[in-house]
Amino acid sequence: EILRCLVGSEMCIRDRRYICQIEKNKIIIKESIIIKNFGPLKEVEIDDIKPLTVFIGKSAGGKSIIMKVIVLMRYIYKMVNIRSYLKNAKITRSPFKLRFNSLLHDGLKGMITAQTEIYYTVEINGNKYTLKYTNRGLQSDINIPDKDLIFFKEAYVSGMRSLIPIWASKAVSVKGENLGFFFHETFNDFNDATDVIKEQKLEYLNLKMKVRKSGNRPKLFTIESLQNDAVPIELRYASSGIQTSAPLVAIVHYFAQEFSFKDAFQRSVLNYLYKQDLLTKFTPGINRNKLGKYVHIHIEEVELSLAPEDQRAFMSNLVEEVFHKNKKDRKLGLMVSTHSPYIVNHLNVLLRAGYFEKARENYPFLEKDDIAVYRVNEGKIISLMATDNDTGEYVINALDMSDTMERIFEEYESMEK
Image 1 (cartoon, one colour):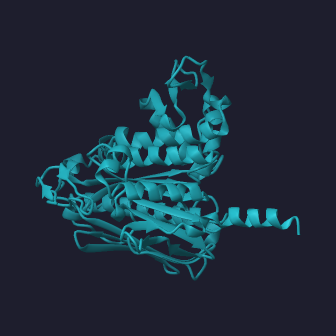
Image 2: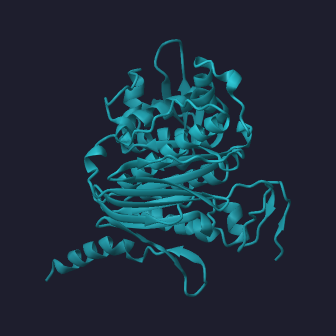
Image 3: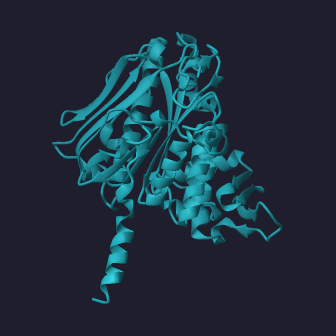
């Protein structure tokens, strides 16, 4: 079992225990976060945010709050990177003012107290950069040298995505707080995605979504079969599971393969320099093409309105898109909240597939270092990652996730008593 790597290449020969990490000029990045006294969260600490991070727990337990705090801190870190990039390029006047309270949306501002603390750290090639929020406010006055600069793109997919089909059919521009900030972000990402995606396969349901645009009229989204000539149906009239999952798949596909970092960089940096007549003073020490590029996709209730077997197929679809089909100029991260034991147990299947060569050919497998699953309970989190005593394989401890069914059966049996 020999591990062979081509230095400077993305090609790697793996066996069941190793993954090649030797790449020329590779950026090694690690994120961690501590959240204290934020809404329902008492103390949450994640010392290594994995590419696939899953939160499971009861309703109103704080799963979405954790993700919203993480996406907030990631966004601020992105802006710190852009500010550092400009400063390092001799542009001292920055357009980016980071006011923490103005970034708190959809009720988050009311969750802040004098005891709230947030510590978000990004470690790059051994160098640590920390953003802090305490009762003294946000502390983000850090400068990142060119060699450690990275470009983050943050996407948040709201649990309100079931409103997208009807909202899109009205051709209404979502602005301000009409349906909340996070729905606004979700809808705009879907709109951007379907500007470039004209057909999106929904393989988990053997369907596809087609996008048609004519003049100034709203886009028309239709659902069609992958296998026969059944009559198409408009997305807004499709089942609830299709309405919630089809926009999500389109958004994930967009960020995995179609999203342009070049265009995003131009919108956030070059346009500002042009408008301020600062292009002649702009002397970057690093080419923007050499910046590490990361897309983080955060999804509320990933299983929303899907049947158990469809949930499994859907999760496989997402994992394949994010970790196996993504464009090679970017790294993707997926963070989801769920109530579904089916999702977590299916992730065990994908995780175990990573240990066997034949299984890796047939499943969108997961590597053990790429996944973490946490139970959210009473304001804290508990890692569900463990090692199987018999095989030594990495597993998700989902043993108690059938407790509800057992209790139902016990009550059923108790009726005769």
